[in-house]
Length: 422
Ligand code: GDP
Image (tube, rainbow, N blue to C red; front, top):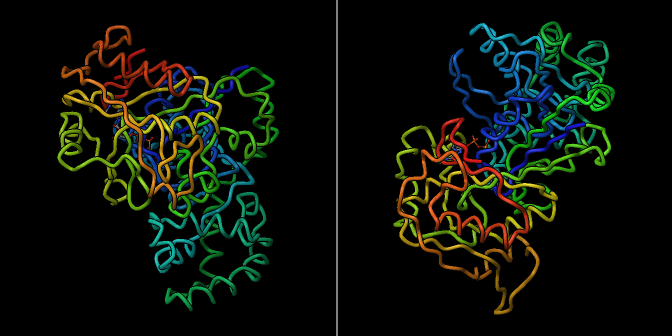
């Protein structure tokens, strides 16, 4: 039995896709368990360059099953385009499956998102994700299984569309006609019906057959709808237990949970960032050579990415919620040119040291407790073994392990897929 879950330990953008790629090399199944096309990554391999937002990266491993899970909200148009793009470069997509219970992200969700002041205020990516989840919660959404019965879709739209159009009217958005939506649903049904499978049997069968399964989370715990920096959060739970909860298997079947963290803090858009650093320092991080190699610091969402010192209060919190067995520490190379590095090991609130993660509102007021470390001032980018890292980089890692209580087993030393020291 091998069920691995890979999740973000911060605010997203930790470098998870690289780690998922790493584990997917030996996987039989890769599952995305939450989110939609609001995050994603570029995969460059011998077949070409691919932008994956919905399809798990296991698609490039021959024979690997790729599963878009029940916890996702999926824009069928985007999924169909992604499939076509991959196929056009002669990579087989026959192993891509969709949970019958996954939520369909409809065109009106995007229109609602674009016209919502509330979504603007919390930094929505305008892809309709939050609205699709909201419709799921108020039981007004369509699921992929509904595509197998267009008559049922038509009846559901009779209930759903008046509510949506009334909301769009108030928000100043365009109206949607049932006829047009039914036409789209018909096309999606034709193109996707063979990929729609019952998810609980699918996953549990794979587990029973001892298949190597990798679950891939989107974003990170600080964007979790319940545990994150509410309201600057995503609409789902990017934490390990949600992989089991949403997929419909027992959490007792999980073998390993890997938390991915970057060597500093970064946050796209608004929200508290207790260890935010002055621009004079963050510019140094941004200016590393690897930046030129494609680390865009939030360009994907079009929101400026704010940078801070590593915050171990956050990583401890992430470990507590997720139960990490191992940590993957990425982007250590970005600290290569810093003479001095600060690490937050806890918070004071109103002058008192605290041992819990305060609310987002209180996070604006915390005073980080820093340890000052010496920088290593040498390039780590060619290093392949953790034991060969500079002494001060190893001290940095030891501090993380000591404060968080979880071993660092992988260290990212560059943006390339294979820039991982172990
Ligand atoms: P995700 O949102 O957690 O899946 O993040 P991605 O895997 O898309 O990574 C975010 C960015 O960090 C990408 O531009 C990666 O190329 C870059 N990245 C990942 N790991 C490293 C690393 O170890 N060093 C450097 N310099 N960049 C990295």
